[in-house]
View 1 (tube, rainbow, N blue to C red):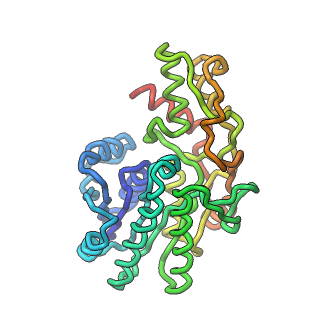
View 2: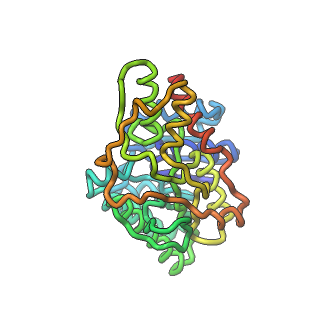
Amino acid sequence: MKKIFITGITGQDGIFLTKNLINGNKDIQIIGSTRNNSAEKLFFSRLKYLEVPENNFDKVKLQKLNLKNSSDVDEFLRKFKPNFIYNLTGPSSVYESIKFPNQKYEIENIFINLIKSLLNQNNLSGFYQASSSEMFDSSTDPLDEYSLFKANTPYASGKLSNHQKIIELKNEFNLNLYSGITFNHDSEFRDNKYLIMKIISNAIKIKNKEINEFEIGSIEYIRDWSYADDVVKAMVQICELGSDTSYVIGRGKGNKIKDILDIVFEYLELDWKPYVKINNNLLRKNSPISIISNPKKIQEEFNWTAQVSFRDMVLKLLKFKLAS
């Protein structure tokens, strides 16, 4: 029986990761940590939406666990004895970490509690750390595993600290550790504070004549967007086949925010220009104009590429929102 522990399991990556793991393994047990018990019903309804057979649901259990408490983490890991840990937890957005800068220490503290407990128990289970493109000094595109890092937010600082510790521990103990540096990725399970879903939600309100306009910071900023399920499949391949510690996960192509507006409003048979106002004050300080990945390493090693196009991803989110 393969035993997997997933922190942050109720987030979009955790849901897609669960789907990929239980659909591909007969003998598997997954426990995911959650901050509140009320998330369980929504979590399993989303698995059902992803066409996970309900007879596979008994392979997954959600457990309320305070990951910031080292004693609780140690006790849980001693009992469960996981073969692999996916550490996906963290603030839900960069903006949230700016509003609550102490979340940097939360990101680091949870990581340390997990790793310290494993080392104390001599548990050599595999470990995947969810790192972020926010860690990069994004002055030059495209960005790969060897590009310079420069953390400009508490979120990026916490992620970078953990990424560097993964590399240090790998070199010192030769443990089965991986860090996946993910670029922007979205899915139907994003809420309205994320850019693509914010645009979609407001566009639908305009279509329904509920609002007359909305603001965004720029239409020219460029980001490397992928569909979350593609990104998670890369994570699984890294952990099963990876020969190195650090991997960049991204499409390798950029799209302007304007492209999102074009796709969404065209589908709704509207012209976005009268309804969208540009407010530069909404832009995050030090946010680069362009962030694009260079996924050459993962493409060559695993033959991985993003399968869902940017346009199809945006339409998936739009159609989901229209139906909900």
